Image 1: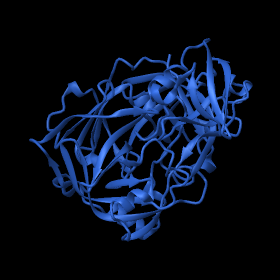
Image 2: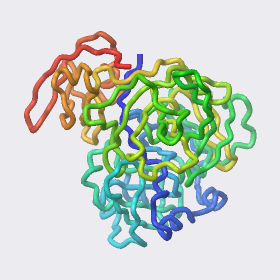
Image 3: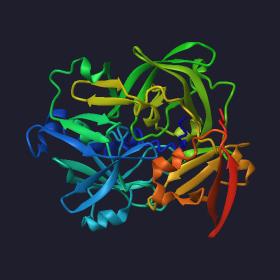
Length: 419
């Protein structure tokens, strides 16, 4: 059984809350043809087998900036501008950036005051076998609240000037200049449109009451949730009766602070002929979304769903392909200790909150604690996937080593399916 932490990074629609001039600067990057012409492959017209890590259900890639600095970045289709984002102003200094073309406010989830980033132009971004020229670079100026995030940056639409195949089973990306003959081998084809540079797909949600509701969903590889829905504006998408909620409501962190809400299930998510049953769904408080979703968007699909496929994005062709993998039928489950976790850059896990009434809550675990070890095994040596895997076994008793205020303690919890 799967046990995934619900950490809503929710970086979608980054440019949608920018001021007019700043938004225009981001959205007026190279056109599709220009961006593609600025792609240089080391050999031929492809770059195959680019390795990535899966951390907190997010794709993490090494990206080289201006042939000077290599940092790990999250591949996030929710980053809808033609460039990359650095989360630490000190990295900008290492690149020699002391002056910026302009300062822009950042969007994304959370209800705190938007962060500001410096905008640099003419940036070169490199991955194994491919170079992207003349891209934009945003550098967050106040990185205090995001310095612990497990990656130092984010890349999205810039990479999608290529055709991008994401093979979650093999943990590799395959990049191609074009996709002239797709064929059935790539899986089912879905037309995609774009909102602020972010792909949107049409789907159908079957509610817990059996009602079929057509929806438009962002496709966001930067989010590690399965499905997120805006229940408030649409009565036909109202949250189910059975929900779980963290003690203080925190489901995860957005660019601009905590995201609050509840978790439940929908009966089914239909993507054309493909149906996923009993899908774990986040119902984020509407006030927390700020402007991260436009009025025409009902929610988003995250990596807890997407990693059940081999997927191919063809932005230029306005389409994506999904081919179910061996993970397709894996059940959706919330972390069975009841921990709302976020992986940190130092390899530890921040406990953002705990589900009310969960095994962790009953054991006295609280938001703000650090998860250091499970059953005596340091989470830094276990890695993200193995750490989360140890919290899957329903009914198993595990010992959590925690740190609070510099003091360590151990708590035993018995894992249980919470919803």
